[in-house]
Length: 311
Image (tube, rainbow, N blue to C red; front, side, top):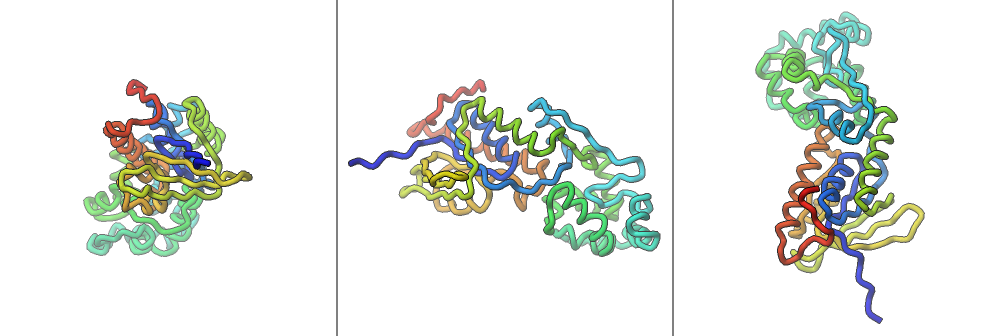
């Protein structure tokens, strides 16, 4: 008896967060046949940054109501890094002695910044260990669900350059917010992250995207570099299934397993390199655009779905 062929899709998206779902939406809206495999949710916190206006723009596209939170004058900060060393919040949390330690940042030589990549080490060096522990780390946990250290350039692009230009970390915050007020803003989505995810699910369902909540997903490259990949996944409370795909958009640990394949692939979602929703969204959309371009250029293996470039 001949072996049953696996169902075929243009793109498989293995996701943990809304940024990956947006990448799936971008592929599906032009007609590509897409399957989305949702692993257990990533912890994103409830007040993502509005840096660049990215999250607010997405919510507007999805007809979701948002509230933009801007700190009171004198209390401006980026993830707890204060613009004003003597703000009421800094004095309340750290006391006057701690506030003076934060102010020392204004007097320290910029040479002490060096090429520091670690946010934790940068804050500890410039503002002190208590400022890191009591001001910055709690904000990263509550706003973003981040409990580990992260690269400065990945979390707050441009902060190191601004700090170098003006000579201190707190003045760097002032320069950044003067250039773009969105960097100090937070976005509260009515209904929270579940509402954002649900709205994206509605868009995916409209474009007939196959969706599964899964506990595990594994991707195996084809026998030849240009072959489709096999994707095996275990839906919640169901038997394992397997499909073949012509392209892959997935979390970094899965994409890394495809390094020997020429299968069009890209990293989507929140990751070490894109640790916030505001950074993961544009990066995921760029990855989706690259994969779409690769699929549409393969004349010998056209997409399965009825591609509509007007979509």
